[in-house]
Length: 481
Image (cartoon, rainbow, N blue to C red; front, top):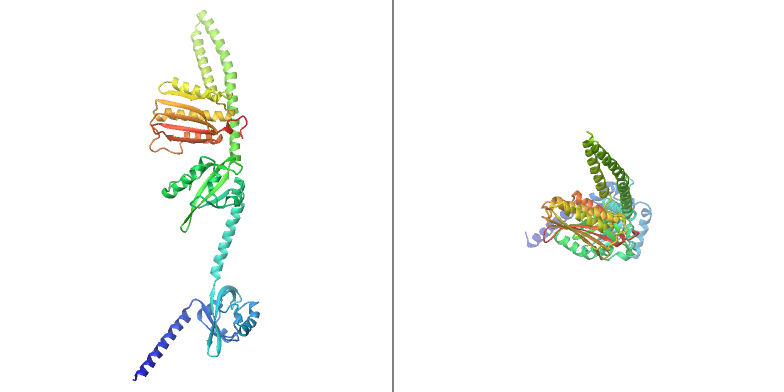
C-alpha cells in the first residue's frame, strides 16, 4: 500500500471516529437539539428533544418547527424567519432567550432556546438548543413566594426586626422597628445599632460585639433578655430583645427581635402599687385596729390579774399567763405591721427604714451591720421606696444565710441621673456553682424592673458580694414618668 493510500485510510478512520463522537453527543445530550431549513421545516432532532416535546422523530421530521410553539409565537414564526433571511435582523438567532414550548399533549413549558446558523454550501440551516427549565422556574417561583411571604411577615409583624452586620451597622429593619424607635427607615440604615441604646449600653455595645466574635461569649445572642431602648426623641423604654446569628456564606449577620413592653411594665407597676396600698392598709389595720383592741384587752387583763392576786384567788396565775400571751400577741402584731409597711410614707422614709433595718440586723448579734446614706435623699414614689427596701432586705437576708459574713454595709447615694443603693458583705462570695436563676436574685431583678431600675450582683475584688440597684430619677419624683 502506498504512502498516499495509508494517509487516506488514516483520514477516513479519523472521520469515522469523529462522526461516532458527534453521534454519541447527539444521542446522549441533555439539551434538545433541533435542525430546521430556511423554510422552518424540521430536518432532524435528537432523543432529548423528542423527550422534551413528547414526540417521536417520525411525527415531527418534515413538519414546520412552529408545531412546537404555542400561540402567538406559532403564527409569527414564519414571518420572523423570512424577515431574518431578508434583513439579517435577529431576535433569537445568535442571542438566545427564554421562550415557551408546546408539548404534544398540549401543555406548555418554559425553556431556554439558543439558535445558531449553519451554512452547508449554498444551504442555510438553523440549529436550536433547547433546555426545559420547568424545575428551575418552579424553584424560582417557590423562592419568590417564600420571599414575598417573609416580606409580608416583616412588614406586618408587631415586633420590631432589625438586622446588623459584624460591625454593628444596621442593614435592614421593618416598619414596626421604625415605629417603636420613632425613626424613618432612611435615618437608620447604615448607622451603628448602638444609636438605639442609652448609656451605658451605647458605649459598651461595640466591645461586646467584638468580644463575642472573638470568643463566642454571649450575653444576649441566642438567649434574650429585657433591656432598655432609646427612642429618637431621647426617651427610654423597657423592651424584650432576643438576638440570633445568621450566616450567609462568609458573612455573619445578627437579627434582633424587639418588643416594646412599656404597657406591660406600666400594668405591672400599677399592680405592684395596688399591692403596696393593700399592704399599707393591712399594716394600719393591724396596728391601729387589732393592735389597739389587743392593747385594751391587755389593760383589762392586767387589772383583772391585780384584783385576783389581791383576793388570793386560784385564777390569779392563769390571768397572769393570759396577760403574758396578750403582750406577746401585741408584739407580734406590731412586728407584722412593721414588716408589711416598713417604709414610712414620707419622702425621707426610705432612709429611715434602711437605718432601722441595719439596726435590727446588728441588734440580733453575730453580724455588724451599718447604714450609710444621705438623709436629704427624697423618694416621692411610695412604690419605688418599698421596692428598694425589699431589694435591700432580700440582699441582706442572702448575706446572713449564705455568705458567712461578719459585716454588712448598706449604702444609698444620689448618682448621675438617679439613685444608687448598694448592699456589700465581706463573706465568702458566690458559690462555685452559682445558679443564675436563684429565687432571691430573680425576685430582686423583677422588683428592679418594676421601678425601671438595673440590678447587678457581683463578687467584690476584696472578697464578698455586692448587690447594686440603680434607679432613674424619674422614678423618685412626685409624678413618675
